[in-house]
Length: 244
Image (cartoon, rainbow, N blue to C red; front, side, top):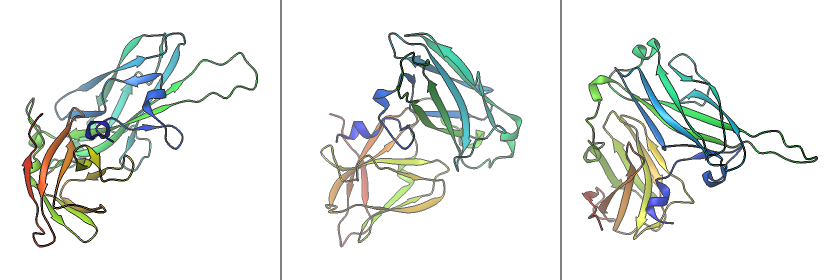
């Protein structure tokens, strides 16, 4: 699996399924709502050339519980004709002021497609659901347009079973790729999200002394870094990977 494949958004269908089978698709893979912005807009696209769909949107907190206190979706339910696009706005509510001002807070934006009722008998219909990370970013840590997340403040060290990450930043850092020449060393499409001011260990088997790590940026792209460390040199050196 190539590194760029891992940077794509996640989709939840009952347990899990591929985003390519969904009819209703959001126009991005993650969302940033900055303090001071009244709302954030995203586009929903009905990829079906023949069928209309309803799109139902809602917000969950970081534990996966539906939440209406901090951010609301407008409209929560919308109909899209075949091939149609529409906008959904995520409105920041006053309760956001109660969240920590020195770090990001994590929410999830969900959109579920509702297909038209089938006229056939004994037909099983499947409702696909997309789930996107939604970060609320306070003014104190707002990034300028085009500014990258501060990867230099992430410290990596080698362990017996893989890699240890120390995140001293106020941002959620999602590790989407660990591998060599586009071949991942992670299981399936697994990833690791480092919450602000935390440290976690990622299990990686057969880790060589030189490899690449990629984190997912604000716009969903994979930012690659060359990593060097071995059994003797536990603390890893990190340098930006050259663009091809």
